[in-house]
Length: 370
DNA sequence: AACAAGGGTTTAG
DNA sequence: TCATCTAAACCCTTGTT
Image (tube, rainbow, N blue to C red; front, side, top):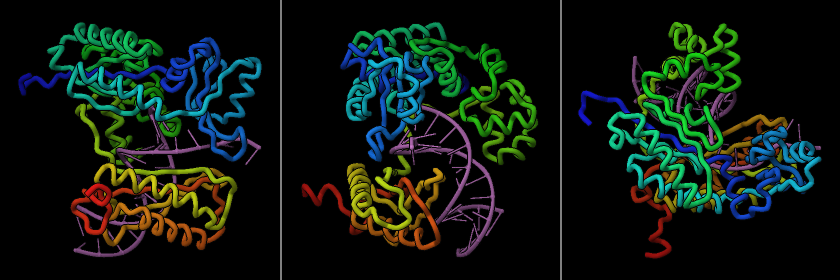
């Protein structure tokens, strides 16, 4: 690839209804029934939310994020429905094997989540999108034969178009948008389909009389800056034009958080055990990654489901569970002292990472094995 | 003016 | 009592250099 030609071929892979499909894989008898993967909060036997579900369940109204109890109502005519607790470790094992398959097709890969990845296959295609389609079919077939899982694939000249192509046909889809078709593909779609536009931004755009992506692409940049700010405004316009220069590469983790739902709502600090556990979890992750954090924050989700947060910068970067726990406890005590704060869920978040070798007084693997 | 810190919002999976 | 969990990007304000 010469430097004059910047045209790329990017392929996006998205495993279909991944968690639920993994569950079907290890228990094939549930395949023809609604399958709902749940995150139980532990408040009551049933409380919690749906993480994901198979397409039969979706056709009956179940979707990600709804209360488990609501999903049960929707499926009350299907007594054989499978409601299963999320088993993240198992899905990650399956995911790792699939990512290995993907890496054999390109070393330029970006894993976006447990079930999604981008591959830059420009070197393989030399700009030929029919070759890209062939590679997409090959990847789908390999994942099906080796892991018995279906996925959807999208191909485009950048990550944005590849991703939107994936979403255009699911499950088991294969969609290729070549550069000359990008405009025809995007223009007629409703703005809500554009990556980065959710319900709130869709409403703002509707207020401006902008309904489809083509209209957004033609909107005066100044008007978008006024509505969305100096970064998001121009960004949305570029996206609507199908422009996305972001390279395919792994991103550094910049933040780690753990949140739990409390057994009972509270307006005082009475969850020392939970706090210790999640502080230890976070500390372990930091040590695993060989990093320490500069900032420690707390998260509180109120009974009205509003998110509140407090944070402070540490005197010295650390990855010690005790120090994270103590810092968080201090923040919580201040938080509850500020006034009436009725909280349902609490969490800890750390960020501002520096290599732990550059810090003094933080635990490292050497403390355990050295 | 440029930057850091802190708090909130929106999006995505 | 219906309402999980993780992470990123952005917006805004305030305060410092």
